[in-house]
Length: 154
Image (cartoon, rainbow, N blue to C red; front, top):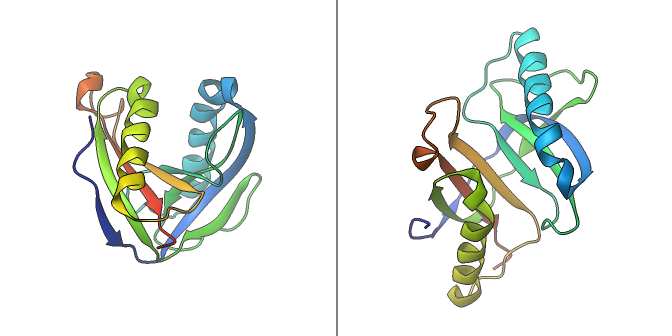
């Protein structure tokens, strides 16, 4: 289900974000409009994304979601409405890629967390999910690629 996980070091990346705290069942209703708002605000400021969009879950999802819809950018955004400047800091992460429909993300995360539990690493609470290839690139969900990054404490 997932590629063989590995440990890597990230570099600091400027981002533009919209922070949301929602009930789990609201995700499909808010994700699309939030992403459009984020990308529109970035474009209106003449700023270019430098990579695919992602979500940064500040806590492990449970009954609700506390996360940021994010996009890496070439220069800092000016805060506008819900869009704020931020950054993905340099850190050590465990990383893997899941290929398949979004409905399989929970199972893929379970597999990744099992690997972390047996690998000897201590993960932080937050996590990153980068949508490398999705519905905008192909109508075939079996080709969609989502990169998982889990910050490591040790």
